[in-house]
Image (tube, rainbow over all chains, first blue to last red; front, side, top):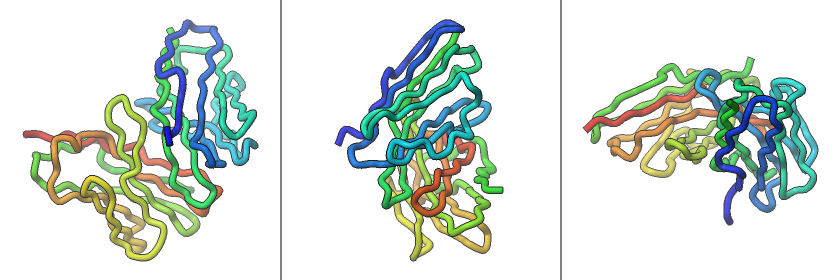
Amino acid sequence: DAGVIQSPRHEVTEMGQEVTLRCKPISGHDYLFWYRQTMMRGLELLIYFNNNVPIDDSGMPEDRFSAKMPNASFSTLKIQPSEPRDSAVYFCASRNRGYNEQFFGPGTRLTVL
Amino acid sequence: AQSVTQPDIHITVSEGASLELRCNYSYGATPYLFWYVQSPGQGLQLLLKYFSGDTLVQGIKGFEAEFKRSQSSFNLRKPSVHWSDAAEYFCAVGGQAGTALIFGKGTTLSVSS
């Protein structure tokens, strides 16, 4: 299996622009998680889905952030408009229903200028 | 409140010396415990996990961890550290399938020659 795939790996954008991060979970996994990692706050859970349905989005920082999972093999995290404080590494992870182990993607390093 | 505490932000160990990274958790239900490792620029990789049974669990790369319920701890150990073990280590706790993981802030391990 290819593992969790994220794109792009690096994104540099200017403040006010829309940013879309993409994730393809491991085939057969029915949970998908989005995390944000910064030096100051560590690894934070933003939102997670079960069977494509958002279960907990309490970690989404504000309305500028939105996430969708239109099907079992694809999810997006969108920031509109982006701000410099959104600069971070964003990770996607997926998990099989029967286990609590999460498999992480390589992350997207976002820089907002 | 549910939380994971990794008291040591940064540890330096000589190559060949033993290692212990501390992890304490607070969780209201039966905990599922994990240690992940993150190399620079990479995603998180699972080292080992504890669900039930033997409280001493073995993982990859020669790591082991011991679950102590009375101390709410899940410390990670390795008898002889290699330079390639330099990375950031995260402890995490979760519940039954269907819950998200809670991560500690991480411990950065440096290995000196």
